[in-house]
Image: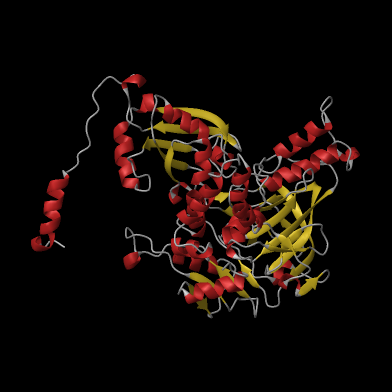
Length: 534
């Protein structure tokens, strides 16, 4: 059965021995981050190079400056907890469910349509439903509220302040009405305002751009937009947005107007996870969460904005982003292991806070891997492999090593059947949604275990002639890439580490891999205990 809410999930973690309650007083400023960083990087024997054995989820119950508050962190910080969060024994179970839906063929006749009815009924169970009220409205504050009442973390010494790091940010497409739930860090500026760090490629940022286009073309505050002579209002809005949300120039004279935003903090685990998945823009994360938990997400309408939020969320922030306002946000210690530098981003103005009685504040920290977000990223890797195969059917497996922080390195194995296929696969990956930001792609043959970095290193480096097998291209890069020649634009590298064929111009013989014969291996297996070498 799906978890009802965050508290139900906490109870499950405790039953599984995956939760540690901490009653010693700790400070949300830096101290919790240091504790959690150490727990994320626990090792057998206590030091490297022993393998990482990540510690438990942590529930802090004695927070300096916040008497009576509780804070949850590291809830997704291991492979076992990711499986528990999605209520599976293996993430491949989720991938198999996705694959089953994708394998459905269009019905050819009446009997085919009848056979599809059970699956259609099952799909119908996943759609979110709106209810009249929920626990998130146990306390409603339209006045006399402060974000500083919550134990929001400052994670690293050079961070610009406190940041909300695990929010489910809800926006609505002004053209289609479809909702999006994204996860964007939010720097707390004061009691009622935060930054809204939606990078330009995120769906929330696209909703923001659509609002700006509407404003620039006359729907809202056309006179407020100053643009170069001859440039259309819509083009001006796009140009301004391109210079912000990750640019470093000033952005004066933005179009006037507001965009409604709601933020849910402390949701049940499937919904929290859904906020980070690279889903198609037309598929609502509420539906994805329903699919993952096999039960619909219950929603309630906000008090001051026309949006719906999870009924069982611990905390909900309601408000607006003003189209004519940008503010310096950052620095922030990011998942790259380096600080992302200050830049201009929109400002979120909170108009109302609703929450449960004695709300549990849910958060995370990012930094040098391995950390909690690494396990969430690995879950995305496993679950969405079937979707990648829709466009790249020759894919066998992929690996996004946590040290590659997801966008820096992807290792891909393929079933190679024609010359140049590895390069075709590289370009196909660079055309897939968030995969466009992958800096380095290594393509190997299907018999290479991409999850074994040692095997990949041995075979890939043996198989390449660097000048022949490495290609470079230019295009969009992740906003957090501090090494690119320009913000959001730089180069990428693909490495064809497959065996080379004569049809690819390789005329030398290709050597066999050193492998012991099965007969000898079986003989030694039988003698192993007798040899006393264990």
